[in-house]
Image (cartoon, rainbow, N blue to C red; front, side, top):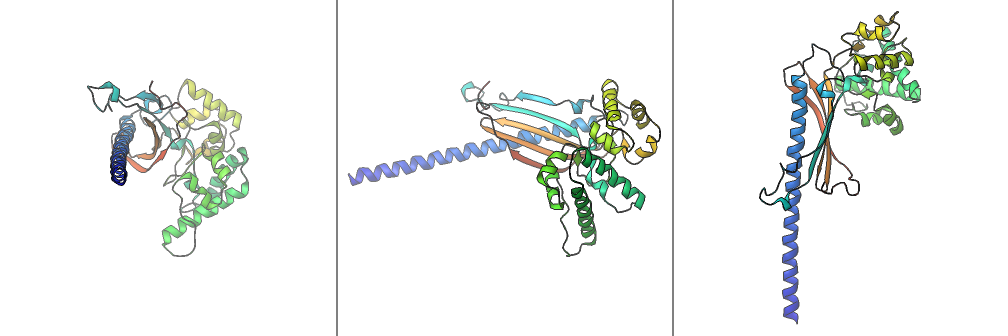
Length: 310
């Protein structure tokens, strides 16, 4: 009996080791395949932005603005082409968004700006915060914090100062509450340099904030007008608002109809694995390579039955 028990124990241990090896190999294969697909999706998005050429105008009717609906890629990932029972379910979707359709937190930096320009920059964020019912005290903390972080970064000193955030969730370092960051996320971005707002892609709330003197109703009128015909220049956009008096001066340094910064999102479902990759990219000039500023890959939660074959 002792011999039988010993043999059974050794056999169970061997089977467990074999099962563990198979699971590790399957997980590694899924990781590599998902990485290949997400890298390919990122390269595809960068290619679309690179070949985009519309005479210096970016708008929501261009190919880059059309999201990729979930597409099945199981044929590509077949484990054995001769045996369809081993085919794996793989679905890919994605989208590209214009980051210059939002207010850029870097526009709050004081370096190289005169007092009047600094007050004008601050007033634009103040309008957005008021529109979204975000406390004004948090805007003051954000402005002070990002300028302190930028000054410490330039000086390279060891004095206590907040770190310069790289992503929107990190704005909590500078005094914003998580609830405020969530409310502001669709309307804010954080880019490495000052950027104007693209009137062809911005929401009515962002346009209202970016153009002092423009009411929210006029901004909504502008958004409705561009749905029929995109704006080829800033004066055409202001004309669509119904009131161009004194607005042109307010748009200097803050408004445009083209963009250089974009956000790429790719979502992958591979069997029971679900991932999303987010990348911020910068387009230097049309026809030139598109630079990746940063990228992040995060797991997603699959709804019940979402990973089943279709």
